[in-house]
Image (cartoon, rainbow, N blue to C red; front, side, top):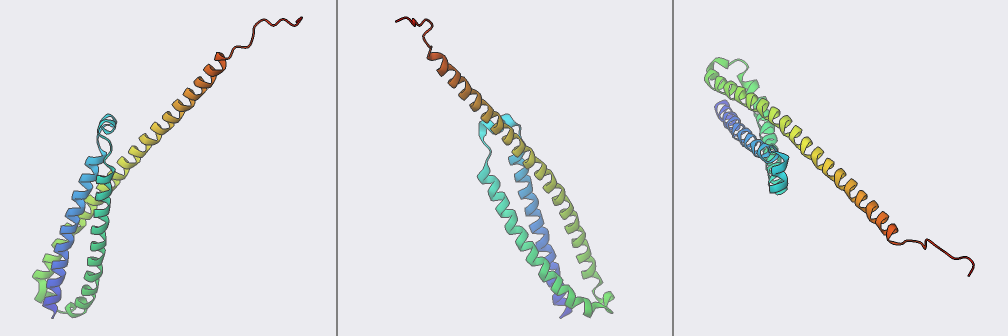
Length: 165
């Protein structure tokens, strides 16, 4: 019984590694979508749909990861009681799981760094877009003032008015 629980835990850890690798790929896609000069963004246009797809895919992967974590925790609670005095019998499986957990921790750390970098890129993108909007509003307001001023100059009041008549 303990043997099969350990095998399920190993498979769960393998699946976590696969999911974390896919999350890492999605992070790279997001970085590629966000990290190019402003001039290129204006020419090519920001691919909002592609970015949204990466966000949705990462959300789905994270949900799957959370389910795996719950299942792993339940299995570990069952196995931990049975293994308390028999660690030597299952040493190889435990070492294999420890190595996989080390890989998962490493991947998680890399993903955290990628997420922070992508957040900074998103913040920069939105800051640039807000600046463009402000400039656009100012330009529109200036154009409107110019138009109104020019309209007033088109209507010239009579310069000489004979009050005697």
